[in-house]
Amino acid sequence: MSDEARQKAINDWLPVTASRKAKWWYSAFHNITAMVGAGVLTLPYAMSKMGWGPGVTVLLLSWIITLFTLWQMVEMHEMVPGVRFDRYHELGQHAFGKKLGLYIICPQQLLVEVGTCIAYMVTGGKSLQKIQETLWPHWKGLRTSYWIIIFASVNFVLCQCPNFNSISAVSFAAAVMSIGYSTIAWVASLKRGVLPDVDYSYSAHSIPDGVFNFMLAMGEVAFSYAGHNVVLEIQATIPSTPDNPSKKAMWKGVVVAYIGVAFCYLPVAFIGYYVYGNSVEDNILITLERPTWLIAAANIFVIVHVIGGYQVFSMPVFDMIETFLVKQMKLPPSLILRLVARTGFVAFTMIVGICIPFFWFSSWISWRVCLCTNIIFYSMCHMA
Image (cartoon, rainbow, N blue to C red; front, side, top):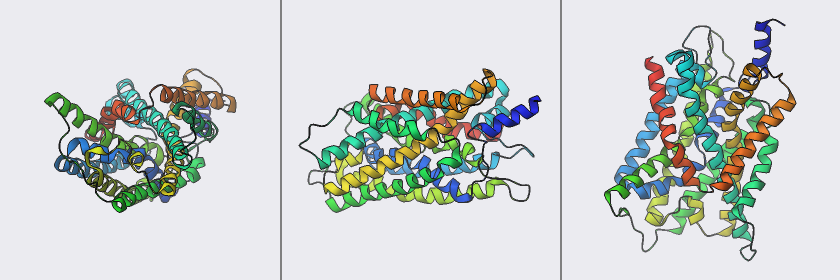
């Protein structure tokens, strides 16, 4: 087999480039699944750290700026005639050089995607635990670590789906669930009514404390817009011709997705903070206590969503791992290789999630990277 034929065979096997049959609505629900993640549940908590003025400003500016940078990325996917930048690092290599682009982009993208997968492990486990505590309050139950293991068991199976299009059904269900639990969060909060002793004052006791709280809140907002890191990989699944480039279908899906983002983010953030003030938890569903059936349903929605979100964010990581093993290590593409590599990654995120079972900590660790990959690098690539 010639080297060119071997490279084509590898690309046809790798998860990002294996299938290019996606429709525009695939990009819509993939982007909703990636964007409207569990981070939306932390937005009232972020508001409590920033206050009304800065909080509203940051949320609205984030929506506008990230939509603009996402448009830039969609346009740059095929900005070189005859070439498709199917992966984020490929665009970085085009802008900054083959080696420098790889060194700049890959670590940042991996930190965001791996960090998101870890955060989803924690969220899935805690949502399972919340269901048990809500429906069976007298049962002692299991520790959070065991619930994370139970959640991970589903991902051990689903991670074997070969490519993006093979997880379309899971991603669609996740997108629907994300809109569902976001709606439950703000409707249930509004129905409960404003707490009698609600407090909107700044909780910081010193300037360093205030700066830390504001940066933490920025982290929550940046984390909630982490979907940019998979946009090129999603667009790579859409067919493209000179007369009908992929950017047309992709942008249509992005617009639909961002309307869904606004519908989910703004009511949850503003109503959640309005009702609970500074007493809101870092996950608003934890703050809600009744009715029990509604809280249980919301947490079931969260579990379905983070399962789909985990698959969307892990697929580019699988692509990087398998590319390294096949192209650099010269291992033959096989089901065994895929089974071992992907199972190992899921196990890694599960173990880290057990060791650090705090959603806010996972998102705070990756927020600065999200800011770079969502805004700064896109603009730099566009200028380059």
